[in-house]
Image (cartoon, rainbow, N blue to C red; front, side, top):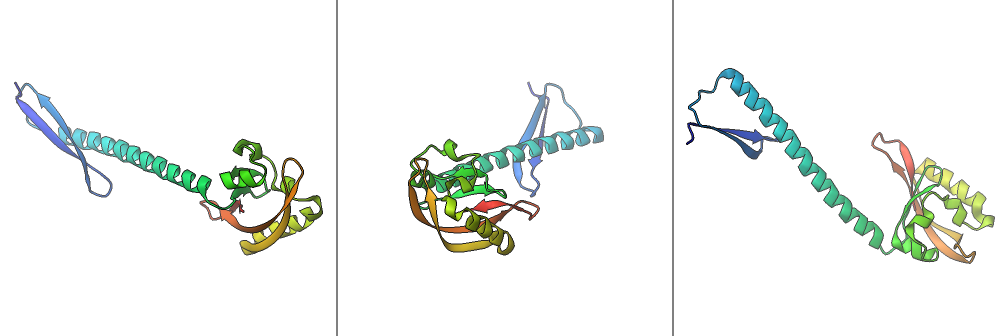
Length: 171
């Protein structure tokens, strides 16, 4: 037997209904002002938890889409920090450099894959990117793990963090 049924809406930050909190009691009950404050607090806690969970799921889904797009993009992509340390490479980049696994590149410096005669020029170009934000249509002789070389056309841009400070390069 249910003597009292309390239903309390769980309202999100955008004033949207996320759910309903329901409590049942076998005895009749009057809701006091202190009970209202309790239910509002509990409802707010549930709303925060639900919205956080939904945001985490949305971010996870977006990350998976980004990862697929990044990996399957038809051009080579390398992400580095400001010092040229490689943080990420896509499948096309791995294939160009000798079909190495992605892990092979992580932590190595971008300059390790540039022909010795062009390293000074590459450093100069990175400085230009730091100043202008991007550079296009550079021709570089790049080298694979086995030492063979190939000609590549490179476009690069400066990346920024949340505080709008330079954080790395995309090439």
